[in-house]
Length: 62
Image (cartoon, rainbow, N blue to C red; front, top):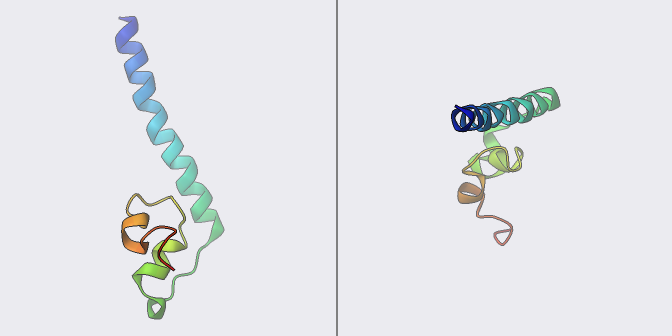
């Protein structure tokens, strides 16, 4: 029973962390400009989106 409890607790932490990050980015009121393109707009979200490094090319692509 303790293993199940620990497993569920670990799974509960993931959405809580995501919710905190989402709230932070929502509070920042990031403006998006369609003329800037996807690469620039994704970069404005930092590491919040999983695919940012794939789209923006990471730090080495400037």
